[in-house]
Each structure stands twice: as C-alpha cells, then as structure tokens.
Image (cartoon, rainbow, N blue to C red; front, side, top):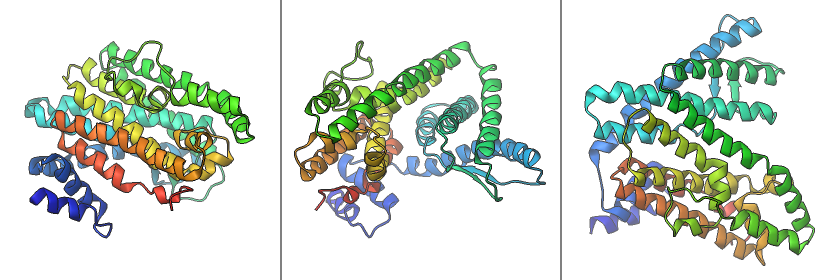
Length: 352
C-alpha cells in the first residue's frame, strides 16, 4: 500500500525531483533507508570540502596570473557523483577509523577525474565550464592555469599512494582516449548517413550500436553485453568509472561487483538520457555521433527513434537500479531514479 502511494507521488511532476527520486526508488525496491538519507548530507559536505580545497589553489594561481588580489573560481561538472556514491558505500561498511583513508582516496579520485575533464576541455577549445568572477577574453589562459594547478595536485597525491592506483588510472584513460581517436571516422560515417548512404548507416549499426568487445570486460553479464551501444559507451565514459572503482580496490578497499556495475551502467545511462538527449540538435548539426543521433539515423521515422532512445536509456538505468539494490546501496538506487526523472526527452523529434 505504502509503496503504491509512494509511486503515485513520485509520478507527479509537480513534486521536487529529489523527492520523486526517493519515493520512486522506494516504490520500485521497497527500500527506504533513513540512515543512507542522513549520510548523503555528510558525503556532500565532504566532497564539497575536497573541491573547495582544490579550487582555492586554482584561485590563488589565477589571481597571480591575472594580477588580481582575489579571484573566485568554479568548474561546472557532474563527474563527482560516482565518487560521492562510492564514498557513501564505503562509509556505510567501514569502521569509523578507516573513514579518513576512504576520504583520502576520494580526494585523489575526484581531482583526477576533474583534471582529465579539464584537459579534454582545453584540447577541444571548450571553456564554458571554467567560471571566474572577473571579465576576461583570455578563456584559454584561465582554463590552462586551472588545469595545470589541478594536474600538479593530482601528481603529488599519486606519489603518496601505491603505484597500482596510478597504473589503474592510466589504463582507464588510455582506453577512453583510444575511443576518442575514432571520432573523425564516426563523424564521416554520420555525414554520409545523413546524406542517405545506407552502407554508412549499416556501418554505424555494426561499429557503433552493436559493436562487440575483443575481450569482454568481466564486469558485465552475458545479457548486459548485448545492450545497445555498450561497447562504445563503455569506452567513452564507463571505463573511467570502472577505473575509479579499481583505484579504490588498489588502495585496499573491498567493493562489491554489483555496486561497480550499478555505477558504470548508471553513468552510461546518464550520458545518453541527460547529455546526449539535451545536446541532440547541436550534435546533429556538428556531426557528433552519439547513441541518440545514431538512433535518428537508423530508425525509419522520428517516432521510432524517440521510442528507441527512451527504451535504451531506461534499460541502462533500470539495470543500474537493480544492481544498486543488490549491492544494498540505497544512495546509488536513488541516484539512478534521480537521473531518470531529470531527463527531458520531450525535446526530441517524434516525442508527440
């Protein structure tokens, strides 16, 4: 009875998304873990403190570089959510005496993730996420200073951890970068497919949508290996977060495989359901192949592409939620619900 009522409230779009996510997860799983909900605020504070510490060094460097007495800096990123969820997972399972070690690894993981993201932004001339409180036309300089500071902090932290953490991080980055090297090829296929080339469309299906692994990651089940776009999206974003979990393991922390799967599947789902859906028009214009643009190239009509996009995204997120429940990670289950209920697929053609 209570689960049914919770589900009804969760489906009311007038309710706050965070509330809908909590009630939606309860309706699906039957789990309402008050201790986890209380823990969330503490985890948020811990990670926000990590970011403030890193950004303080960046602000000092920017102030010196631009001749200001003080500079305020922020970087718009969604990368820290998986680190928050992992820290929450560990805090629930570790004695208090081991919490500082988990926090120390989370600090390294968080800064390494943002450093990599900043480096990609600088390489791609994308500076919109670098926010400062002074007027300047030298956006590349702002970004370069910020990334250099963060890189130095990350290198210093790696030196204080076992070598295996660095090796794991480098492995994940290398796989992700090899995927990026196919970007030109995928853009060419997309251009040809938009011009009506059926051979190009079929290559997108074979090499992007249903691509298979030479050596399938042991992380996934046989059924999951059949998910549309798994290979390309694992290489694109999933590998980074498998690498993140492996860094915790290399530091001596035990993490359930179900939790790891929930994180990786949720991140792939979020990439498609939030970023790729939101960026659909821009990506179509700029010839950027994503699961969403691919569906609109492969489908017979917009309505079919829309339904397929929703089904694919929901498939990833529902699997992520189930794995979170199996791993007894309420926060991760709620996060997958939040991701799903934050999507706005109505911006896509064929939604009505």
